[in-house]
Length: 480
Image 1 (spheres, rainbow, N blue to C red):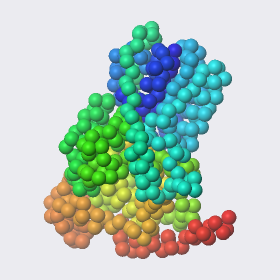
Image 2: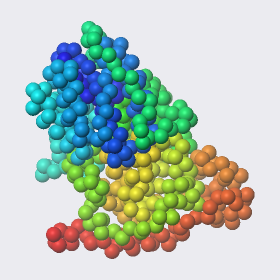
Image 3: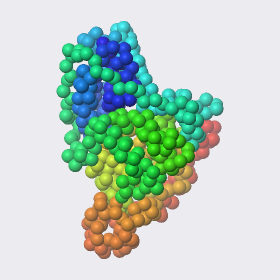
Image 4: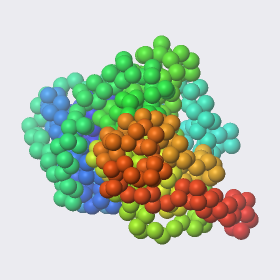
């Protein structure tokens, strides 16, 4: 018998490890519940719940092919070698198959499991699955990992032109194994069950992921470039949670986008091209995780920014976390996150820049808070986004480019539709006042809405001064 160990690849279709395992003979699947590891990684309760709900759907789909899904428990990944070795002995497993995951802990876990299994005579096989290209295969002319997205993208485009990643076939039904599937737990200790309202926004299962992908590709992708920055419009694919859990693959997304654009990456439908670029940003940040492991260790990508004098300001941090900053676009975005487990991408940048620049609070505080609340929380993308916004990361915003929450609000939510949806206490304000109630004198029946916790102009100057005091990269190198 052969075993597929499922992780963030909760799908039947286009699953590289599953297809490879099933070609070798009879297959069983296993999923490890690792609550202490998830807590250590700041995984959000709504994300853990989403995994469990998707597992239930997947168990049924695998069951239709007579592939049993077994559930095993290990508090942390350190216990994975023992738990999986035991299972392989029970089932007389010959080989274990996994789709590669990235990050220091993930790599260490897989090496330890491979070692333990091979000591027992069980072979361990890992496959490229959640990326188009193997990390380490897209490099600069000098053989280093790219640090600038546009250069990385150029190489990816030329590779995709010469060899498009193919979708792998779905396994066929196998003879019954006489091994029963385990029930998938509905809750995990340490993780609160999210509200039904939140769950209803994110139905589980491959059918739902496919429905969203098809609807986006058919109806919305052409408008993506023009509408993706407006949080009140349904301009995005709403697929990020499904991609993060592996309920849909990036290959399926790429093929759907190419299909609407006559197979083109760089010409034709500007919406499709822009969306393919977003898939490549996702790819870029995962390559960064492998090429520069310090970002997995809570370190800034740009070492010189480790010297930044961040403020210790617990009250300001709490106001940001609880949507009480007195800046409507920031508070509306944070409420969206708290209530739905998701935040519009443009607003992720706006609130991140507000925290790290206007409040001068360490980006790691924001990164952690996002991970603890996002249903699509993904270490590489979340870290990449936070370091971009805080000007500590790869290819990041220059430190002197600081978004003004007010101008972002006026530009991307001109009529205040998004703000009023999440801050109904501001519903009576007109479209000019709603962006900045304080400037309107605060006399419009919004007595319960807080005043801004910071002066935007002064705080911008404070951030610029803090960044100017940093040593340059060259100076850092000279001191080492």
